[in-house]
Length: 365
View 1 (tube, rainbow, N blue to C red):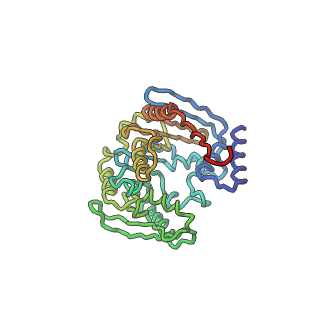
View 2 (view 1 turned 90 degrees about the vertical axis):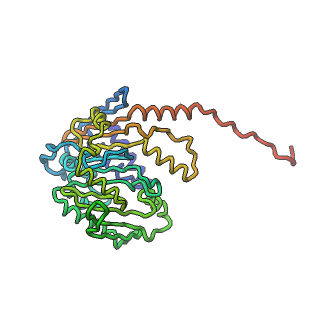
View 3 (view 1 turned 60 degrees about the vertical axis):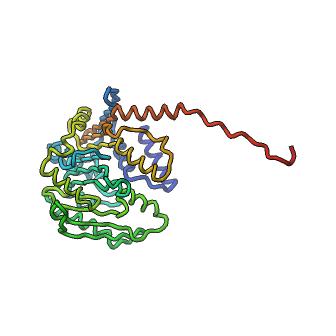
């Protein structure tokens, strides 16, 4: 009852202030409303801080799809992503999530009544973003790879093409120009489709949005390759041949994939046996790129948490079925130690002395 009251208060405040809640917040609220009860256990392991939660769910909504054999499929894997240090790595078995009946809102665009066709066609996905030699100039997604799995990969590719070209013409306040080139030769990667989505005009109030896109995609903007990999489609967010070459190398030799990581195998010991979603954040790698940004903009880096680039990632996993949702969050000991050190550093700093009051000269005493 307390949670429902909190959710209702949040919605009422958003309506009063006319502030739209983020899509992910709306989704989280809906899932919490469907939760009938649950328990969370905190495990202080020498290697990590682990939070395990289990929630008992109310029956799925009436529009949920009927139960299928999707949960007979294996858990998520990272067998098509290069095995190297990353900013973020994520994988999801979308068919398993659909089968649970609780995540229909998650599997559709926030501003649409139905999921986009390319997402409906996708059975599972894998994504990772890695540090790039181009640094901030190339954008955070300069060396990133998205794998969309589908038994009908050609149909999926056509739907991605339609989604890209749908940005052109554009009737919204931000004008974009979208291009698509079929079957272009890429060095040491065979043929692939080239796409780009460029902002050509935007009102001044959208200046921050343009800066954010540059942070993600770099100075050259949002562009990349789309390649049919047989039963999957690979999408990049830059047109660097090396990114596509690495995807092909992993497809030819899965032992080079992120699935072979000893770190992931260790962290899965604290995760549910079956996993519909896995997410890892390489905070050590992210801290490096944030430090570059801080130096670039001349900001004070003293308040930043110092994390070893080789520190294990923070991990999250989720498993959902018709009756329960189980999740786990793993924060490795080096990350906890870095956060504690930064907290103590700030707590022990002497308070700043107030500026002395200087009486103005002249005038009445």
